[in-house]
Image (cartoon, rainbow, N blue to C red):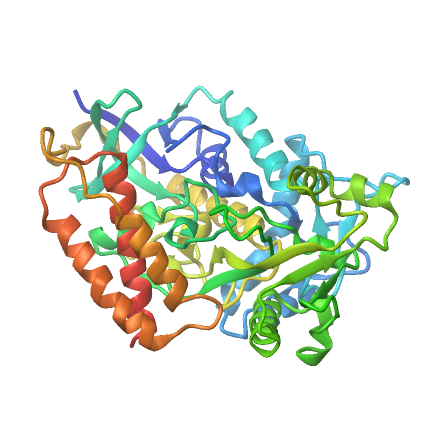
Length: 485
C-alpha cells in the first residue's frame, strides 16, 4: 500500500529539519534520513553561523558587501539581500529553541571572526556549532505529531506525477516502499564523496542533485566547488576533518614546507583572505617550493584559551598525534562545499512546480563563485523557512488522490561492478581540484559518461551501492560538462 503525505523532505540536516519545523502543523510530513540521524554535513560545521543580530558595531550592509566580495560579485544580489536581512529572525529562533551560543563574561554573545569577514559576526558554540544546532532542531522536530522520520532509509528515485511526486525508497531491512506527496523538498546536502578527499560526511553523495537532474530540473554552476584550505592532512584518510576558519580568525599562521609564512606573497589579507584565495595560494606555493607540506600554527597563543575555544579540534588532533597548543599542524586543501546546485527561486522552488531544494544541494545564488565562511548554515535556515512558507501559502489539496508511479528495483539482478566510485573520485581529484585542468577534465568526461550510460541502461539491483554510485557519476558528469564547455 502506498503511503501518502502532504510533504516529503529528503534530508535531515539543518535545512530539512528547519523546513519541517516551519511547515504548518496540519500538514502531514515525512523526513527521509539516509543514514543515522546524527550523520549530516550540518553537524560537522565548526565555525558557526554568520549574521547581524543585536550587533551595534555591525550592520547588514557590511555583511552584504563581505558576501559579494567573497563570491567574486557573481552572487544573486536579491538573494544576498534576503540572506543578510533575514538572518536576525532565524538566529533569534535558534536561541528560542535553546541553541547554546557562546557568551562573553558580561552575558553578551561572543562573535568570532573568520576569513573574508570585516566584522566579528559569527555566532558559535565552541567549535561544534553545527552539531549544537542540528541537535536542538532535531529535538524540537521529534516532538511534532505531524512529522514522521524514517531513519536509515535511502531514496532510490523520485518521479513527477500528476499533482505531486512519487518517491521510491529502500528501508534498512532491504525492503522497498513507495510514497506519494503533494510537495517534495530536497535537502540532501553536498557532493563531497564525489572527491577522493573531502571534509564532508559519508552521506554527501549528491543524491538530490541527481534526482532533480533526472526529473529535468535546472542545475546551475555545479562546477563552483569550494576547497577548504585547512583540512587536516594525514595524506591517507578520505574524510579529512576540518580545522575551522575560526582558528585563522583567532590568529593562526599558515606555513610552507620550510615552516615560513607565505600568504603575504599572494594577498594583503594574509591568512584572513577568503577560502578560494588561500587555497589557490597554497597550491601555487606548493608548485614554487616543490612540496605539498603545509602547516597551520597557533601554538604561540595561550594553551588554555585554545583548548577552551577549540575543544573538538584539539581532541581530534591529539588523537592523530598532534598538539595544537605546542606545534604546527599539517594541512592541505580538500573538497569542502558546493556553491552551485539545483537552481531555485527566492522561495527555494525549482524549475519543477512543487519541487523545492534547500541547503547545500540548492543554488540560491547567495554565495556567488565562493562561499563566505559561516554563511552556509544561515542559507540553510533562511531558505528552508522560505520554502515552508511558500508551501503553507498554497491552497490546500489532499494528497489522497495521488497515484504512485511504477518503480522497478530489479530484484534478482546483479549488483553493480566494483570500482565505479573510486574511478570517478580519482578523475575528479585530477581534473577539477583547486585549479581545474581542462585537458584532464575532457579525458575524464569521456570515462564518466561511459559509466553514467552503463548505470542508466544496465540491469542492476537498485540497492544503496547503486544509488550512491549513480549519484556520484551523475554529479561528476554534470561538473565536467561545465568545465569543458
